[in-house]
Image 1 (cartoon, one colour):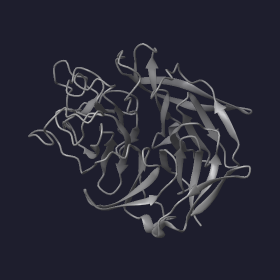
Image 2 (cartoon, rainbow, N blue to C red):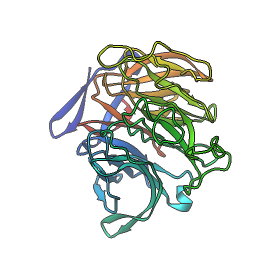
Image 3 (tube, rainbow, N blue to C red):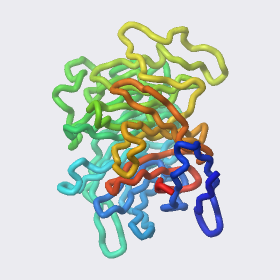
Length: 363
């Protein structure tokens, strides 16, 4: 067992398997309630979103400053301020990308915006704000916003929107937002080679469809593909390689059942629908994910880390090309793991609901 200091005379107890016994968590911030997204600026300061509707700048000394200039955010149930990602050429253009739930409490959906960070004395503010995508708002309850953002090595921006709780309406309908992964140019324009640009009535930003609620997405530096995982219902969480124009089947096919235990489909596969790389039964409730390339963790080379909300653990998947060769629980008893980030300083950062943000270091 490992005791980690998280505040004045307060410790978080962490159970580590033998292979991970050299790791410990170093507290970065203990005031962010739901640290949904983490990214790191060139000066090693962190930008961290709190789903409750605030954006935090945490400098290398640990000083935390709230950033003003946020848009109108619908903070309700699973909605709020969600992901934050830097443009791959941030040092040249200064663009920061954010996802959040927009609209009203009666009808909302995911929006994507970009902005720049201005500093005036001790004050930090977003400027040059530009809404890049505003999904159609649906009156369907404040669930399944998806909302992860990732860039590929060509500078294309991918983002996810969950089915918004409208299982039988949104995911298979290309004319409706939600239950999709989208691709835009970095300025919000539609790429000319998007798969449905010539499909009558389709949302032309769509890149793939048939998704339930993708809350983890990252560019795989080894295979040069976007990978994403998504929440299933009761069982059936999936890890997928996102391919142009593919239909991932929700809710026609699934390895899960209704929360009541009843079945909503008898199919786990169907021609024309893409199978996951792997799936989890029972559900682990996956959150963020990161492909480890940092020289600080050579033992995690070619590992994919995925956080689990339900089981309060960090899962490590060993990669062999497009297949998973091994899965282990890397760290346990952490709390609800919400976010992961490999920083520019090559440290791994982890956000835990109700605990805050930590750096993972060797003991």
